[in-house]
Length: 386
Image 1 (cartoon, rainbow, N blue to C red):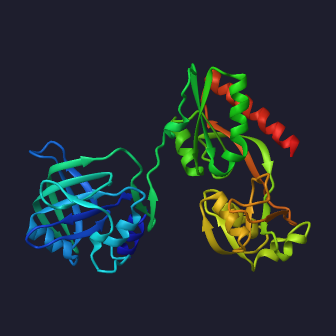
Image 2 (cartoon, rainbow, N blue to C red):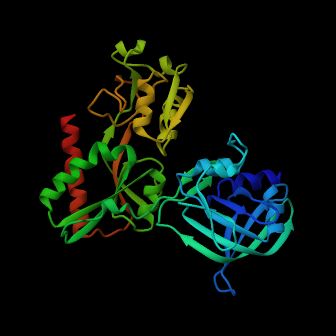
């Protein structure tokens, strides 16, 4: 049905999360929304709109009070969102127990430490279908220091991420030139710090700006020219990118230190298929590791997922399951001090292929060409020492 397709499609559209609040003769009320947008900056006063379900108590209160405040949440304020969405309950039932609140011009509650608070006077209310569309003119606006916003997409919270790298990755000295390297997150601590140290010794006048991300983010960085080179696995890369394979990494199974299979020299996928699996939930890892089972007509029993490499290792160390991984830390101890054991797979499977990736037809600057050469040498020496 078109309605189901619409809902499924809209779930993929990322939106910032805001809490809409109001206070006045009808009392104080608030509700979480993801439907908020600017209308015009050039009307008599800047204006925006929010959509609120007609059954929400906040919908009636906003109309009776004639004012509302749009509190755009930080990525650390998901608990505030859940409270005003009704998913989290307070002991007293008062949603405003979460957070510290003040008021601006209209008297509507404004959340302190939110990214932005737009204090509005209601100008238009239109009922369309199940929702009211409220258009308000901004009477006051408090803009905090920049930071990642809370985002909702794929029916889950996320965080906005700067596509240009963090300020910490910018040069602080007198580097004459900057070259940008995007790296798949699990590979970064495994390969990049030593590369940076060697590169700095050989090219002291060049700063390497490092941007970490998953495969989809790295592809975007390259496609729009935000980075010169990427280091990632050769999976699901578009034809607009060139990939030079520099190192094959066979996957291995990570087991709790006391797991019965830890005594084996090799572990078969068939011995793992009924065991709980902890999946590294990053593209392309989330599809690559299950595909190794599929190559042999098997399907793993995925019980836990994590986007963090170290979280995945720690969950294994605490006996919550096994994991398939590619990069192998030097220490057999997890972040929280638990013992883990790495064993090769008994079956022949498709390896991970670490690749230097650039845009097709791209002419690299001398500094970027030097970086590519340094990557080739570093990975060649890494392979020889392992």
